[in-house]
Image (tube, rainbow, N blue to C red; front, side, top):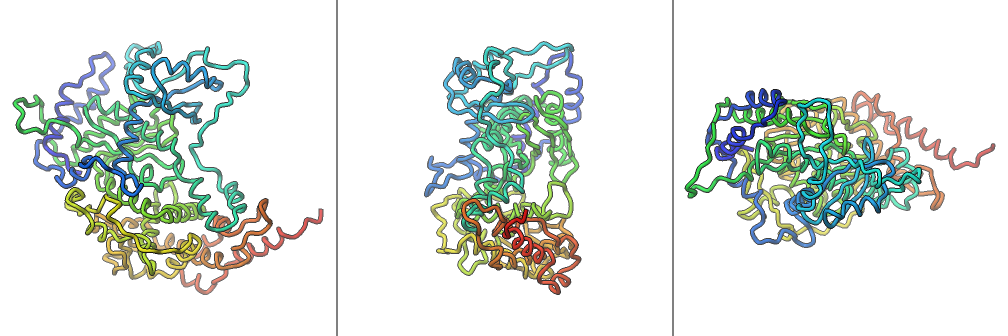
Length: 578
């Protein structure tokens, strides 16, 4: 993203007029002094990129039953603006609770969940209903007078008349916010009747629920309330796994501070804003200043926000914190528009064919079970890299399941044109223009072929490129090279070392072998079976961690782990003697 002069003008104006007149403002004033370093420059966001973010002109944003990412975001943001988050008592009476809130307006949807206590997300029919509820809320008394009464839509229920003291349990049905433990899930998979059903079951269990998606947009909306004090008309949008269709329950919440919607760009107006423009060394310095101010405010006044870190010297500056009421680990950025386009691209691919999402979920779960991926930064393969590897594999089928990015670019219309910081990010957004070829391979076939494909892929010489849908010679020396779909000079897997790639290849070889074995690939025992088979077998612990190189792996095609596994399966099927 590039910030235009008009956007910088509006931001600077916000700094000039938004001053908190209170005795406890010293910390914020110091932060503002550090951040007032704006330079009036003509470094605008490309017009094409701005057009790509604009609402559709024909009013129709759904094609062939597929809702675009833009339409989904608009819908979720509107829901979030009409919603509140309430910390409830453990034995809150549901009927009394709803009746009490209904005094402020009609309730469209609500649900309960647990995270450091019991919480309720309540969506009203109108924003005015939320305003009415906030007007009746009380600012709690505090011992120190410098506390700022920031009116958040995060509330706490302290009305004891709504608590059922007669029951030991509330009886409320709480929506899950995290996935079930892998051992428990392996048992569930073992009861399915086919590997296709196992993969479908895994996808349904791991994907974000309707409620979890709503909660993510609500957290973004609550953060927007804070940022809007300094940047009126700004928005905060989730991106990455939270909205691309491949996120699992419990994944981090990546957020993007969008300032392109700020008004004041009409050159025919007879009025201009009064503002004080400060100097900055670069656009990066502007982004760092913005995030520094918001990070300080979130740290000082953000309800439920803890462990705030301002990581401003990273390649993409960000503010990281934990939002305790939701349980999300959050990253807020302000200069990451290419990532927004990557999110949109993955969302589109996931909507084109249901097998895409199912295969990605399965491979990601398999990778996490064997330590191929990790939540800790390091030399591991990232979820994004794994997803691109799945997409590349699906493009390489004899009958491709999904088109290449170049084909999607060729189908794009004028409104889809998008060039961000010199990178061509153009691709079609109208699903009806995409004609898919008839590929009838099952999920079981695709999973087995995926492992076989990468067990023999020439990683030492070739790079993966989903723009063209074919291998290309490596442009740099790296164990694994996966071209960034939009920033084509970048390798998204540059962090991966040879050891981790060797483990990945060895695991692919082992998993491919397992799926071809009748003993581990056939359900046994009827509806109540508990013996691991099929996909469940692939999620059991492996012993390939000690493999040093692919050469050693080729000399031992059947690992000791597989022999032991087959032996254990035979033993488990024998009747107990005691």
